[in-house]
Amino acid sequence: MTVPDRNDAGEEVLRAAEDFFVNEVRPNANQIDQELTALVAALDRMAELGLLGLRVPVEHGGHGVKDNSFRHFQEASARASGALAFLQTQHQSACGFIASSSNVAAQRRFLPPMASGNVRMGIAFSQLRRPGPPMMTATQVDGGYVFDGVAPWITGWGIFGWCVFAGTLPSGESAWGIGELKPSRSFKPSQVMRLAALEVAQTISATLDSYFVPDEAIIHIRPPDWIHENDSLNLALQSPFALGCAQAGIDIVLAAHKSKPLAGILDAASALQAELDDCRTEAYAAMGDKGNLERSLRARAWAIELAGRCSHAGVVASSGKGNSMSSDAQRVYREALVFSVSAQTPAILEATLARLIKK
Image 1 (cartoon, rainbow, N blue to C red):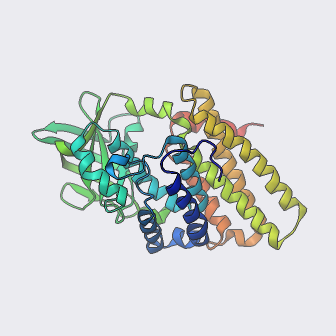
Image 2 (image 1 turned 45 degrees about the vertical axis):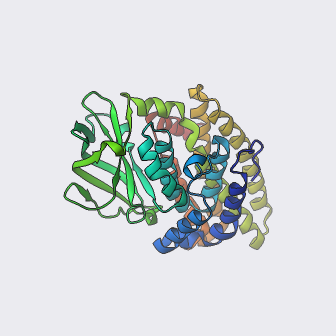
Image 3 (image 1 turned 120 degrees about the horizontal axis):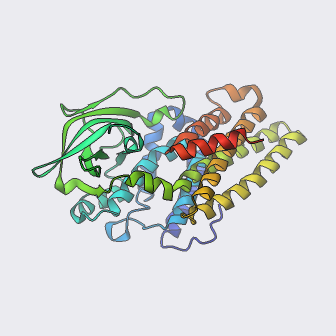
């Protein structure tokens, strides 16, 4: 994986990440997709290599990896294992939210152990994107905030010990706080969801009933509509996952050609690779051009649609075994479904559908 402008202090750890994904994760990706113990072992190994603190500032024990390098890291993770990529990015996102906070006490308490992997944390804020009455509210009380409502998506149940929650205040602002992922009278988890893909990452919903978060664990008070404005600025930022998934699909097509040396298989891989190279160039340019909304939408939709085609090509090239749950092709095909809808907004939904029906 070539990263032309990767010259930050995290260079060594990023090389370690590439070696880890290629030599340890990809050969075991199907097992990681199906077995919780294998997934947790892979996450443990990431902690050993210092890969869970990439977005944690150096002064708090992390690597302070810059944006472009981190995007290439995310792409490499998705190419190796969608389940591990999806799980670890929850923790990396929580690190980023805390690192950008003005709450120094929370940073000192959580960031060093998060960088080492001794503390692992999920996120639960997707409900802020939903129209209508808030699914999760927050109310200021003496010493902190009380959260009430439903967090519809929390990934990492039984894997993460903590979570960043977000609730809507009466003013329309949102309060973001850190709480424990532990059943109680005020935190009622659902059963682990049955999902078509990445079920192993242990996703639940949870009902919060007067769930108290003290002031020292409140990391942000965001303006009204912050989530929508932030999504508009960062539309293309989920593209690396789809790009990595697309590359995984091409990997499978090339692997199929070794056992079935048909010209059509190699031609398909070559054509898809050429398009993926173009798509990757445009997607990374769009990620750096945050003010251009339409460009970001087009790039994200292209990456999503291409991941679908590349993964489908992997199934076709694998023939009948592409329908087996033990097949790399089947796994990557299902991963493409998840990366089609992750962090989806109405604008991304419409752009993706427009791309899919384009003649």
